[in-house]
Amino acid sequence: MHRFHIPNMSCGHCVTKITQAVHSADPGARLQDDLDARSVTITSSASAAVLAAAIAAAGYANTLQA
Image 1 (cartoon, rainbow, N blue to C red):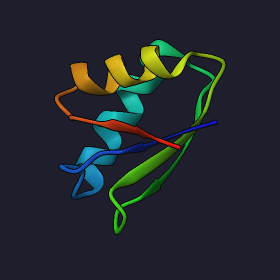
Image 2 (cartoon, helix red, strand yellow):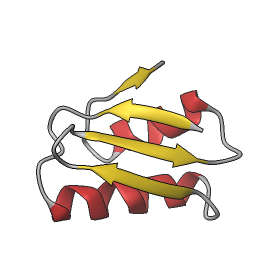
Image 3 (cartoon, rainbow, N blue to C red):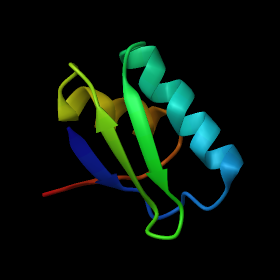
């Protein structure tokens, strides 16, 4: 499980774009978003680096949280 802080995630459209990007890297990934905290928790077999790259490719800066 990986949690990413995504400072420019501010609406449902953002969540949809991020979800699509993550699913392009791992179709079986499960996401839980928190718009108030601007974060997403991802359960995936993909590495954090792969997920971060997919999110960044969708146009969203992100930071892996511990």
